[in-house]
Image 1: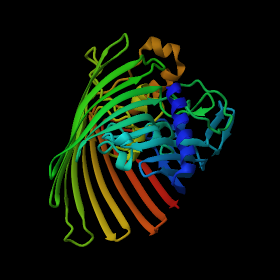
Image 2: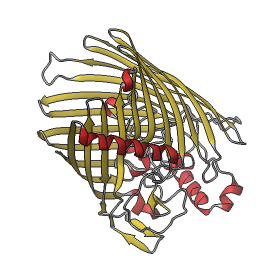
Image 3: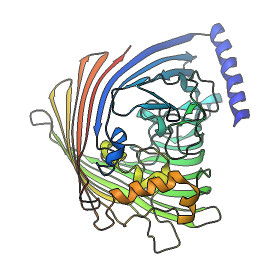
Image 4: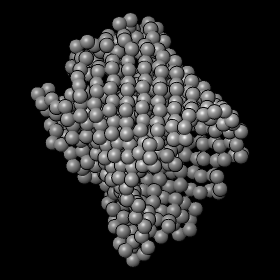
Length: 482
């Protein structure tokens, strides 16, 4: 991969030099995002009173982004984006900078290369589009709605989403394309230089968000290869079949994982009605231990009432993600691949952290062993005002268990501590995870300034112990882009 990066930099330099002799178009920009977030009972649901400084959190986040897109001769462009997101923790949670002796409210964060890619459309008039380098799979580059491919760096929250990737898009014919994608995402920044705080080297696999002086982006090194098709079969029907291979390097007590995923997504629209869904099956193996399989998918039915005031949209959906059966030698738990995000409810993506920490590390968004019902209602009371009201009901498919053995926990005191949290939080009796509520509104104040307010509430069911309490999440945001 280093050789590919070196070759990529040579190509970038070559096209940059060409730009001075040819017509060059610059599109620089700056983005500032100010957030205040408050979370209550979001990790342990008040079942670990001695760790209330982790279970409650209030912080200010300041994300600053600079970018420039250099377009050369209409079909070739270079894109560079730099990002940083300092955070100030109001409390009670604070940042651990030097084991347990140096606790700070302010985390100055790293200044890093967020995106850096070369894009060439139809080189030598071939029916291909190339995109080489660090890139996001969001917006027009999103695969489906991010069910399996969404965030390559979930460890830093929404600071970055990038994938180190090479994408080749074959333009078969109008409305029919086939993408070939190679992915290489390390656990901490490896491919580009960063300016970062000199935090002490941590070796914790389960608890720390900084690892060897750098922010931890994912639990372990990940590699992947994907073939993704898009075909507009009929005027109202689009199908997206795909194959994804993923390798997760060993870490903690987890051996190497090789996983194959086959799936298809479909979208059908007719007048004001719509139906979309996705189903995927997984098979693979943890090296030297056990086989892996999984099944997941979702289906959403929606209707838009444009003739009514505020243009309301009604949406109802169902999500299914298989869970591991402890009575078998196989692991049947669904793997979210490169998509560890909100999915159904952003607040609940934190609540499931302890449940899945041995597979995902100290990060939210590892959705597995779940079936959920979602009801969404969208309104546009004003031209620039958007409102979303949502209700979610969730259940578990299997009674989960802490997958590490007594011998392993005896060797790893962190793992033994996590088992205590797990046993104190999850009842092991019921399958009702609980219900969630979301109220979200965004308002475009000016063409360059957008405000957002979001509140989420989670009411735990009998899947958790009776002492579990409600979790709450509030976000206030102002985003400025020029």
